[in-house]
Image 1: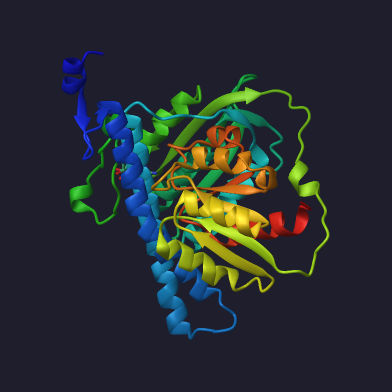
Image 2 (image 1 turned 120 degrees about the vertical axis):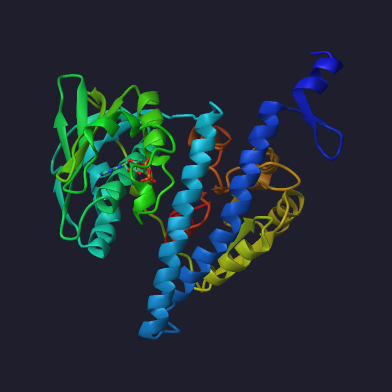
Length: 394
Ligand code: ADP
């Protein structure tokens, strides 16, 4: 590209470097995700620390207030994720990773995640998914987002004492249908074609049901990228049924869960974890979480260079590495760490602020042993710590 053309199609950053529009947009999305999720990470994380600290039990009122903060925090996180997904879809950059997905276990996960939703809203959930021993080809993370969104709508647009359902069935030899149904307010026939359009919200000027009006349009795009189809049947005042049809996988062989089979020996010496993240509040959070593991000490660094030096000097047992460091991205940093002879096999966990910008296949290819989403869920964090520290001899 000539300099003239480059200047026309690109923007200069503060150092005078040229970005293409696409690069600038990706950078914006990554910054947006980072800047919004980091403070929320701290809010959710510290609230979890307070609510689960058995050494300092809370009064009922305190516990209730913190439960409300957590609930609203997760709601805000859902909305931020939806907006970022929407912007990524609009920019044509959405990536889908197709896998064989076992419906039984996916449905069980969904059911356990929606338990509190049904209890809080006085809706009776009916699940007809037991022992549906079938597989579909889908992106499991996205499929979960889609089904949770449909179930949350089934609750939102319902009535007190109403019902919501989740079921699976065979459409034909090649397709499987997941059905999310409700006995709620329904959608008028002349509006049915609009529900998958972005920003469509029926009668919402007269209703106090909150929402952004983008969930169904995101779901449609995701299902179509999985070679599937989403559709709806509804009757006003009676209820709605949303159908997600996905390609069926007829036979799966060689299912294995190698990690779960590793058994290890616990050693009584104090172990060290290195946490590299440029956000101070995240480091403070991890420090306070690790107080629950008395035999583990925390080392921390706020940039890649310092992190690598500490790793060389201290030989920790595992490293958590933020993918978005200011001086170097996580992919280059892990390459530099692995080059060091003493660190070539150390477990390194990617701390991933954005699954869209850093999909799992990229993380695996870069040599990470595992990854954890930001905001960090402290139970998931401790599980990974326990797993890598206790089960692996290195
Ligand atoms: P949101 O729920 O945030 O408004 P969605 O994209 O999920 O956005 O849904 C778009 C619109 O479709 C909703 O505003 C609502 O009018 C209608 N809708 C979605 N699901 C249902 C449902 N289960 N019952 C009745 N109306 C629904």
